[in-house]
Length: 304
Image 1: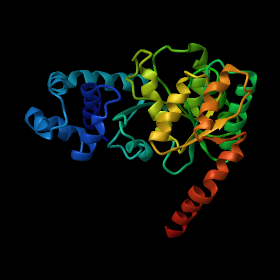
Image 2: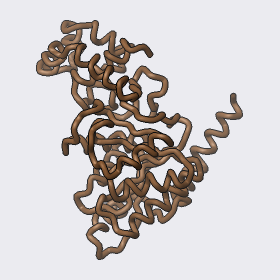
Image 3: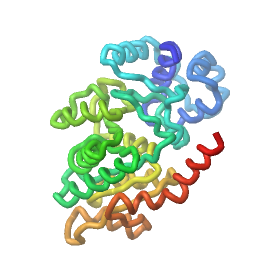
Image 4: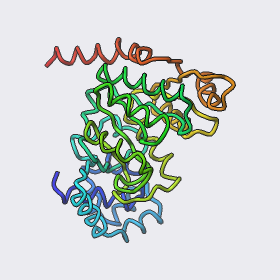
C-alpha cells in the first residue's frame, strides 16, 4: 500500500479515536479509509451510525496530522500495517473494535497461518509464576506457536523470554507508542523481540502510556490469539480483563493453578470456577488444537 492509502487510515484512527467500535462499521461499508474520507459530512450523516460529536470531530480532523505520524514512522523505521494491508491479522479484523492501524517494530509474523497463544499475568509475579510462564511459553514456541503478551514486567516478560529461548516468534503488544520511553528496564528485551517477532501498538509512535490505554490494548492481545493463558492474577488484575475479552471474542481461556493462600490466586481461581481450563504445561494447551487447528491446516495443504 502506498503512503497515501496509509495516511487515510491514520486519519481515521485520529478522527474516531483509539478503540472505537465504529472502525469496523467503516471497514464493512467502504472499500478503504480514503473512500470514507472522500464521502464527506453529508454521507457520514446518512450512515446513521455516527453521533453529531463524532461527525464534528471528523470534519475538523486534518490530514496534516496523519502525515506527521507517517513521517515519524519513517524516521524511526517503524512499519505501518492498516486494515487494507494483506499482512493485517485476519483474527483481529473480526473483533468488535479492531484497530485500523498497527505500528510495528520488527516484522509482524504471519499470524493467520500459525497458532497464536497469549500468555499474561501479574507484574508482581512469584518465582513459581515466572517459571510457569517461561516454561509454558518455551514449550509452545518449540511447537511453532507464536506467543503473544504485553511486554510488561513479571509474567509478560517471562512469557516473551520463554518464547525466545524456545527458538520461536513472539509479539509484544504495548499500551503506548512503540517509541515512548516506558518500562525502560525492558528495552533490551524489546529489542530482541523486534529481531525475533514484533513490537506492535495501535498508538502512534510517541503516544504516552496513559492508564486508560492498557484495557484497550488487552483486546488486541486476546484478539490476535486463539487462546489466552492467565498465570497468576489478583482479583483486580488487568489479565482478567484480557481473559474477559477473550471470552467475548469466542476465544479459549486457560488458567494456571496457584497456592490458594496467595493473593495472586484470586483471579485465576475465579477463572477456573467460571470454566477456564486448568493447564500446567504447554502440552495441555497444544492438545486443545491438535485435533482441530492442526488437522484443518493439513487438509488445506492437501487441497493446494
